[in-house]
Length: 212
Image (cartoon, one colour):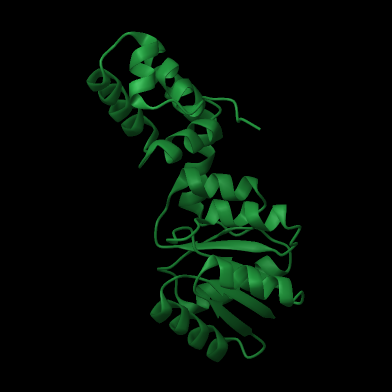
């Protein structure tokens, strides 16, 4: 089993490689510390059986990396490994073809069993994560749309179109402070860190149509 691990933490990457290599004799792990290094390795080597992908990296998050694989027509099974249980991001990764989620808190025995199942075509997600994803899928659209006011939805659409706070204020004849206040509320409802993250999550939840 030839695995590529993409994680920007060198100590974790080294530990994962040492642990799995010792536990799974047939396991050959190559570590990449950033997205560009991983893409270069995948372009050069077409014999990797699996990619273990971290969700949070400074140069490119897991969703963006999976989209990069798709745009480059790099076909490799992907499994997400993360210390964070970001359900929105994980759901998007699964919709892009990820084969499961491996918590970083799992033991090497659990990881070994999960990787074997994934290589054999199974999807592996911890039960509590799978249940949360099912609940989120059922309720997130309705809950989010009902939580956002008509004005907040209007502002969200303007953010998506690229307008600045000043531009939105000018269009709606309100102050920039009011726009900022609405945006802070929108970020809180969507669990977003910034404008880009806000639009990405709104599109994923189908609160906004994805722009092509």
